[in-house]
Length: 93
Image 1: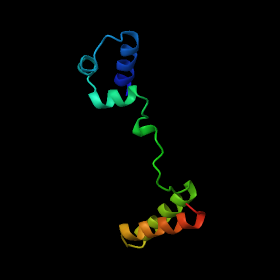
Image 2: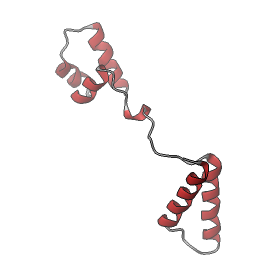
Image 3: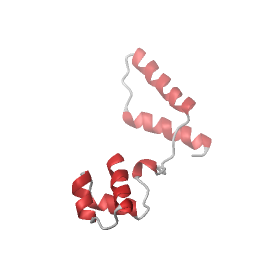
Image 4: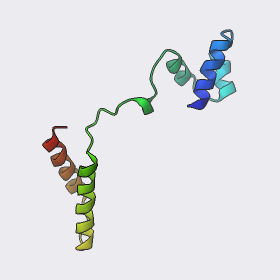
């Protein structure tokens, strides 16, 4: 990310530099540099669009897994997904 920002700044201060030269100089992908120069936001800054659990809901799932483990049962992925979906449906996510 820092290299991309530096490459963009270099292009702004010296517009005659080619994109190809900047990508080699700053070791970044050409497409990524072009996307960022045209204003596209990085994926890390975009919202995921997926519903998420609240902190207390996550804690409830962790406690449930701990209880299962204490009793000698291993939690199954499908059961955890069902529980998470149920909790998200309750709060309207």
